[in-house]
Image (cartoon, rainbow, N blue to C red; front, side, top):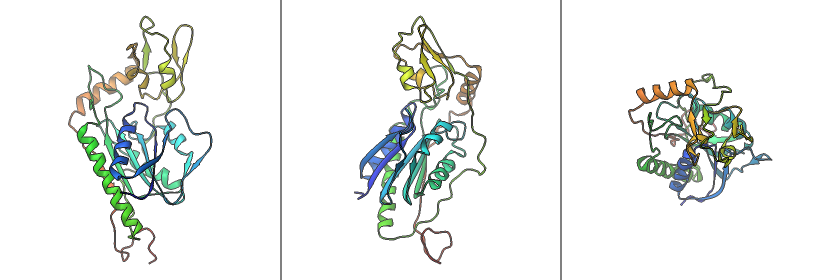
Length: 280
């Protein structure tokens, strides 16, 4: 059992990032004190975490980077040398610079990365015609997430006994690759099927869908496709040529199963140079 206050912070338009985050937390054996879902929006006031807290921060990968909206909302949290575990979730292609970017963002806000992970989930562009990493995270993925949580618990116990940890060097590049900017709507609504239930309006992370007398209108898009995957009457279809093209390419080239990658900090001898908290 981890004698720590475990907190979860995530941005998860289609729910898969939240599932992975919960599985990692469960594996620590600790009790989750707070769950902060940034998908609907940023908190009204900045939230600070104490030095004794442990925060698992997670976000999906969009084109090898973090979604710009997630970055903006994650700036609402801060730490005091608080232990953090950044996690990214991607659709079986590559996570590129996203995990490094998330760790850097957390460090800049007063957190200290003690472990990090990249997990796989069904791609938001996946469909019956073009399946991409369907049904992931699956049982094997969630088991791996639980095991990663166990590794985090070991790290926390080592920290309590004043064991020094290495500074993690995560995959990725600085400067990061260009981020995806504002995009046109990826989906179109079939007004013959739409019941005006408003679910797409409430689920859009960017608050970019508004209901009109005619039906829902999308003004901008993250391409998360939460509106499509959660429409109760399947009234939405992908119509944007760019999204269809990318989905086809991912379907054709990303069928080989990728596995989660985790990066737990290891204990080091204080005689080594790159350590945290050692006075050399």
